[in-house]
Image 1 (cartoon, rainbow, N blue to C red):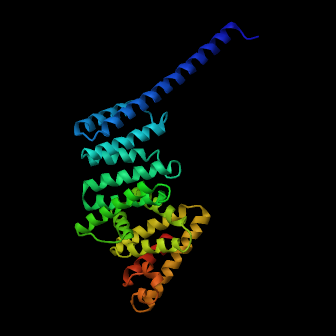
Image 2: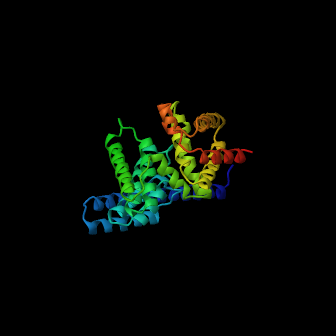
Image 3: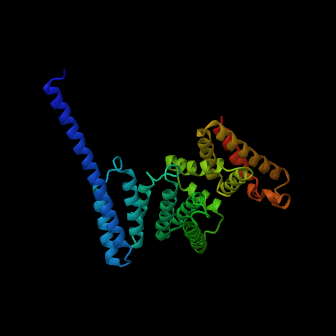
Length: 307
């Protein structure tokens, strides 16, 4: 038989767990109430109300725990980022939207990921410098890769329009280019783990594409990288190969095969005396550039990185 003391200890333990559970539920409800209040204030489109909304969002974040309430914590951060962009605080908005993406990952919360990426892009675009505009382009592209134009037509259209506006702003700033070129130039600004993280997200998109889109996407990126200065082209290509080697075997083989096809096309272009292969095979327009010199540098760098 259980002793009275044992029964009392069990009872006290159950009561404590119940109180903790009720406490977590109360906090969760409190966060929801504060978030809804802030949304109401923000939607009035009055500047003073928007500032009040930011204060309420911050109050909600003060009691939200990313471990205990991950979805709500991310949702409040995302909404805070939108509100901060609306009042012209893009630096803080970038921080808030980036925080939300710690939870709103592409695979677990794809729709929320796409919305957060779109709003992150708006925050970067508001900063206005060339580097931030490139980040905006990449963020809008990330959103569009997830959004289905049939299922999420309004959100898709907004993200696409935002992408076009960011590209136009880059052109006005004297930085025209294709989307892969903007990505390559952004990659050239990064180093270490930040560069690898940037490449990982993009490469995982590419290797899951069906053929021939996979080879085309990898070719467009190679083409953009080869337009950079030789040292940057070698550095980014080596990092790209490192990321490729981290993938599961099937994806690694698919990605490596596509990249080898790309470089075979580059070698063929070089053998033809620096003539632009686009004049020979329009289907390979994105796989080649006219000057062989950076191609050789990148190829040598890949051989060194691969041992």
